[in-house]
Image (cartoon, rainbow, N blue to C red; front, side, top):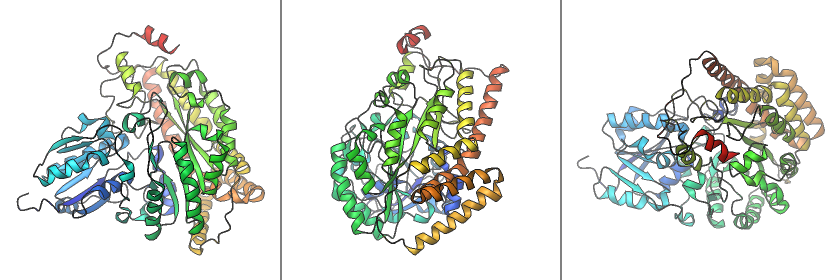
Length: 548
């Protein structure tokens, strides 16, 4: 490192690979759209914008391109880090760089929740970058080549966050791009790490900031799907209601170049004014954490915002506003009694949600659930490490001693996946969604490039749904013709759900095979429960009493 200018280092930003066998990989959907991965690294390009303008930056997204020896040789400093499903590749990137003598800095979110896993990194920058990156830069410029920097919790001023370096991206690599309006969530779900990372008081950017980010995307030539990656877009309702009317005006002025997706809590359905605002701004899909239809489970896990309501009626109101719903469900809660598969399948059918992300309960580091299971002596040693064969909570999870027999939980999970992703069941939900979805029209002329793209996508989808997978042909044709006849304005979103099924159909079968193997291990006495962390004073009896 001698002779290197400390004020203008060559910095390589590396976005690690997600585990390949993940629900969220959407492999076939990416192929149909000609993309290489679902989304670009918003966190890294935001970090890039926070670094000194004199620093020479390169970005490598390992989900879309190779990290070469030449890339590492060029760099004087490597910045990397990601989420738990990227843990294995983050450690691999660290090892590659260490072998070449290159200093590595890791950051949020997994290194923040799991700092000891990344103890061999030269630098660990923990917490929100806006609150600590200046200290890291100052230390680097002063000659430091290792260190730990930790931001004060929940104090980063997001109104000072710069426009992400969208110019570092190749938009052709991804299905969509992301922006962020707020951080944090007001709720206290026991299994969630968001409130531990970003707090319970959502902090929001200014309206001008958000519109400037969209202006930048527009200026770079991007059009299409933009995802608001907020943990809960409506966590600060006053702020989002101030922003959405300005977003609507911006969309009108620019000919509606974007359509938006986001994540929100189910109580979104209670606010007709907010739903109308999102409709007018051209939101088209919302991810909702439903988790369970059992009220006792929702109360025990502090997901009370989903109780005392009809989940199906709430979802139907979102459909009426022109947005379809994707949802998360979890199997393995302590409060489950007997088989719960039937109730979950019924809930998914009643809500007509085609894409349901069903996973096993997983105790994430730095959560209330992790701390409770540790006190009860039920958390497995190594619970925070991602095994090489695990994609995400679909094939991982249950990293603790369960109160219900593990075999029953796995069998229930298997039954849910088998039923909801059986072709006739999935396409039945698609047809019902297509009939219910009230999409708006905005009076703008479609761009010929977009029309050609959609026609090509339709052709590829028809071929894959009929020729490549003939067992799906009659289901696909029936759903396509039904929506084309009864609600053609919803046809593109219905096709989008069917495209995702090209991934979910084989993926669900992969998970079922994995579950069959684990159930066989239990039946044949080949499965041994791992050691647990040092037990607290609680016993299984007191643990059962705590959730009764």
